[in-house]
Image 1: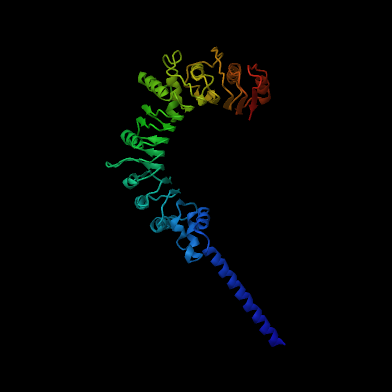
Image 2: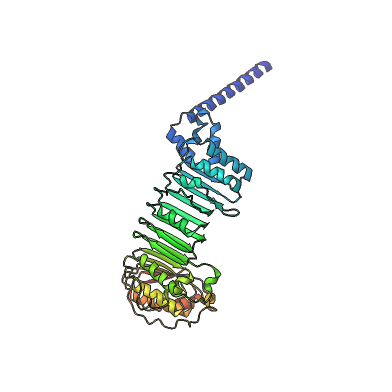
Length: 429
């Protein structure tokens, strides 16, 4: 009986093993026989490292990852050596078309960067994102500027120096350069050599004194930096964002040269057809309140619907300048103000706190007004009162509370304010 039991046990074990092997074979066959589009969908949901590992599933999966159209590489928890090996392998063994290539990391890869860009340029990607933010800026090699058919380019922590034989990116629609160094001529040439450019971002700029943008199809513009001059030729611009002069010296009482007034007037004229405008940075407002701008505004903003502005509401000159904006933008629907606290500027201004803004106007289309960093001080409450008296279609005034005084007392003042719109609500967040 014992022998019979052992035989039965061995037979059962053999059967279980056979069933397990059969199940494994069936599962392997199922994975191997998946349609290419299903495999592609599976791979698209994996990061590159996981996608490469699928090569061990079966012979039919061995090279599937090499046709992935989107490559995203991030050093994350990788050691530097392992990440270098992964990037080299992907760029060397990938045999399909790379539609999008995205590489980011916080370790230094200056020794490998030129090699990677050479291998990448041979793949002719449509979209390139490079965010390697450790150490000094990466000098973008000439190989990258020779990619034909590039439609989107995003670079961070880099130096832009165009090769002499640069022919332009004829298909590029999106260009984003952040934390970069270049020259007036190189940036002017780069932008003007992209005839289909619609979206342009230039932030944390160094080395550029006179920014010259000529882009006939440009619709979205975001510029942040210090410039001596800005020349803009973009007749189709819809959204303009300017963050000018972010350094500490912006808060000093620096005399404003006459040519700066012309610079701002010319800039305002060139963006008079935008629908959305955002302006921050002290110098823009300082230039704006000089000379005759308050009595004769340089442009009418008939299409402007949304405006975002940084302002010291307590400064009579700045408040008047902003009201001039409102007066010359008759179709405004949304206003958002960042209210800078007086303590930030009190050592640099020679103007008393705004006591009464006497300008009377009407904002027929204004629906929403937002005030960020609202401290609940009297001059801020007074400005809100003016908005309520100017906007017959106003539905909501949203105030982002940052005050240190009694909130309930301020709310009582706000709720007691007369308003021309019966639908106007005041919301404090």
